[in-house]
Length: 158
Image (spheres, rainbow, N blue to C red):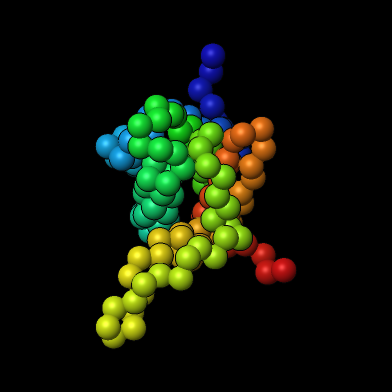
């Protein structure tokens, strides 16, 4: 098979469109594996460092919440994480069969405050909302699906 012409946009698109699918046990010690695999792929395809950092922070927060709150500690469950990466964006889908929780629309509990009135906890989802460009949640057939999207290119104004 001949080498692809480096000026051929189809060849560039194929290189920049990557997918990664992982399944992990719902344990906190599994989260670094997901992060490491994503970082390896991000380095190979040279994703912007700032975007990679934002994604890693959001991924850690969401996966930690799934592990801590979606099911009982003694329940042996899996979490599926898939990445769909293109030149324009990184889309991450996190799926589990734990308790339904919609982080998009659920305001959560009012966090406790310090004596100075600063919130204790409850900032993780707020941070995820700031770092990611899109967040979608769906619960169907006993499955939670959370999709996080980080745009890598400027998006047209609506």
